[in-house]
Structures are given as C-alpha cells and as structure tokens.
Length: 246
Image 1 (cartoon, rainbow, N blue to C red):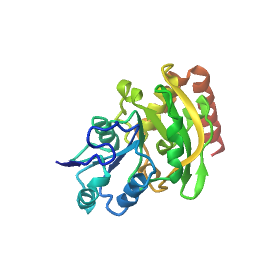
Image 2 (image 1 turned 90 degrees about the vertical axis):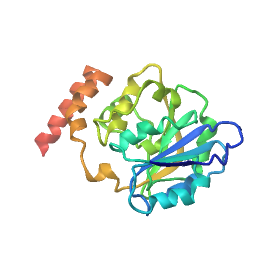
Image 3 (image 1 turned 135 degrees about the vertical axis):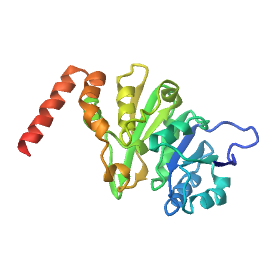
C-alpha cells in the first residue's frame, strides 16, 4: 500500500473544504492527469480531491506522486472493485458534499457555479453533464429514476447520505443507481435540480462495456421496494411491451 497527502488549499489548520471530489481508478495513467487538472484548476478554495487507486501497474503511481501537491489525499492498494474503492474513500473525505468523478472524466469551469447553491445538508444537488460533446440532464421524477439512473458525475451528495448508506458492493456496475433509489425513497433527503453544466463524462466506461446482471435481476423488486406497486407494475408492463415488440 502507498499513500500520500498534501492539503495545499486547506493546509495549516484552515477551513475544511465544502466539496470532496472522489476519483477511484486502476491503470489510469493515460487519462488521470486531465482529471486532476480539471479539479486543480477550479477557481475555488472549497474543493479537495481524493484519489483511491487499486494498486495500478502502469504509470498511475508515478503520476500520483508527481501531482501530490494538487491532491488532498491519495492511496493505492488492491481493492474488490469500483464500489469497494468508493466506500473506502469515505474514510478520508472532509467535505460536506461529495461528488464521484472517474479518472477519464473532467469537471467543467461551470462546476464552481454550483457551490453557492449548496445550502441544505439534507439535499442531493444534481446538474447537467456532457456526454462526450452532447449536453444531458433535466429535472427528474421518481418514475424516471426507477427506470433510469442519472450520471453520478452530475450529483453532489451531502455527507449525511454516507453517514446512513454505503454502496451495495454486490452491484458491480450499478450500485450508484441502487443508492439513488434509496435516497429518493428516504424522506430524510430531498433532490434539487440545478440547470448548470458541471462535468464531462467518458462514454466508454465500464458500464458501457459490461452488464451488471445481479442488478438487472433485482431491479424490478428494487423498484417495488423504493417506488411502490404502481411504479413496479408500470415498469413490468413497459418491459413486457418492449420484449413483445422485440
């Protein structure tokens, strides 16, 4: 295991960061530098960057050591997958809001515009993102979230979410969808849409190449649990129609 930390923006006992940007990665030497740049270049002292690496064998460790003055904390050790690494990251964050950014994703300059809106410690704030070059995002309904996830690069979670929940690691690709379902159904939390463009996410991530068969199997019952019988039967009916047309 290797680790390093250099709290440049909040060193010397200063004010804790408002936002923790968390990146988990493995063999990301070709893309991670751009991700680090996009966080370091934000015009705000309210942001820290936490990077959890899965014991990479490429140039990632060299890059982390070279860029350590721009990273609040980094750690490299073997893990059990994306969401295990995300859960581990929660031990090291100091921000009141958390956002998960892939090693091949970037924050856009407009990200700082959302920071003044972070006023309610029980609200998940979500915004628009670029899918490659195409803007994506809108205000969502419960039924939309039951059927479709929204990009985790668009969501700022209050720390209170992770005081109560963790990512369900058996869902190897869609544990964030499961978490979002839990938060939507939980009366302790609210969701607020911010019509801002804050990040760009990669179009060839793991979820674009593989399927999470455990989540797909469980999804109907998760919809029933978190969104109720009406959403459950509506979802089953639409899925039947799609299969019938297919």
